[in-house]
Length: 417
Image (cartoon, rainbow, N blue to C red; front, side, top):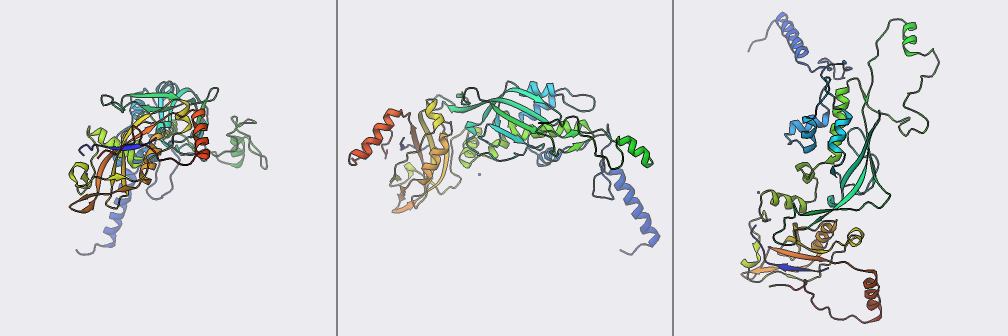
């Protein structure tokens, strides 16, 4: 796998009486009570229990998105258009229709095939993270219990087919199943528990009768907490309004999954992907933000590579025969070090991350203009190949049995001036 430089393309008053003050204070308190949100007392910062059938407040994550003006995601739009019950609940069957049979991205780019999330959509536990091109999940089954929403599916990798000029990397994409046979991806999300409000009764006897227990006796176990139930003993947040619990689940699903590469997903990507999608959205080529960066054809002496860019492939790419060339834009500083890398025509399968890392470590002879070194933008093409076991064994044997020979330039390693 080697890289070479190619031609560059074009590239952001008096005091009141005490009686008057008392009237003002009373008016303010009444106003605050009148305009206070349902379920919250203006005189206390502690929330009061919600009343069954009342309008429940929007969960915090959704409220933050609304305040920030974030555009709704595809999933949020699909849920908004789905029918709801009279109390504002979207049915589990509706959620299944939206998700089952669809391919969704894991927003966190988690690589583990068994993942658990809390009711807010935060990962419970640990999982390595990688390229989003390895985190496309097709949902095959969905199951809902009182405490959890559980999903099973397969993991797919993205292979971009934008190597040829007429191909569009954003549209010409192959999705390749990479989940091993007889294996599935399992994802579970905790649910907020809906509890019926308990009516307060006067007198100790009535309270004992309502609770069904006598003094000193242990409370009965929950019906859902059966022996072997993984949710037994675990704390779950609770509400008395089904609409609130339904919205909590929707927000968690929207935080875990993305139905497409949306703005929220791009915002959490590395810079080389962010700038790639920014240029693609503008339907233009990448251009450095610094106007002081020259193009290769505007300098007296062009930048040259001093080291070989040879990024490693990975096991998934080798097993699925993913090979070819990928284009990257780079800015080389006046000191010969790489300052910025942007994907131009990516290949996917987690290989772009390897290529960008290798390019950042490469050394260059800086470009010069008027006898001084200057920063320059250039294009690099990296080639990924398939290596058989036989080829690898032969190469290893030659490396140990024969002295080092001068490396001849390959078809994609020539430095074009």
